[in-house]
Image 1 (tube, one colour):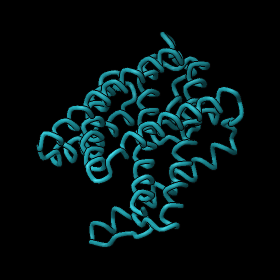
Image 2: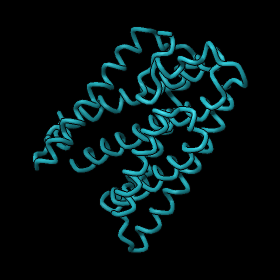
Image 3: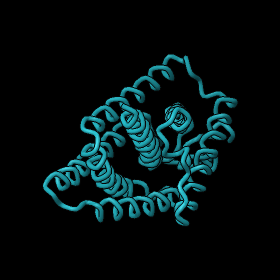
Length: 246
């Protein structure tokens, strides 16, 4: 079962424990891609809604916090109840879109044009990662997986400590600093997020090859969306740091 280890926190070795004893319709890569497309459309549609509200003068802060908390709760439910992914993934995408639209509007108001740059870089990076993976230039070997998993866990711990300190009114300067070290940290996080896409692509192919249950199309699409959103937010943060230096 070590074959199914991945760096994405929503897809792990235990995710596919039922694969070898499952009988019924199996997932396909094509089906997963189609479902990811539906989730992405939902995200973009919801994001345009809160984006529009912001530029109409509406306070979107309640939308941002409400959707962020709701999305987090839904994500946890999907992670622990993977078979519910077909019913909850679209709801997660809706809430994530509302959150992204609101927070992106704030960034765009402060730094016009930064959101479009972040969107283009996100999809460009995702496309490049798939190209490199598809050609076998970057392979999801066991060593590669372990390094990416360790790096992702380290980043998660870093953010967790930052959040706890923030509750006590203490800011971690390196996380928000626009100095060279702060920019360097953001760049490393962007790279790790991008490398997680390789593990997502590999997980999709391995799941399809080993006959994972059909609902794993929704779960895998959900996992890929989590990584894409993370990558977008980190690119947005990096661009904001670079812009603030000008």
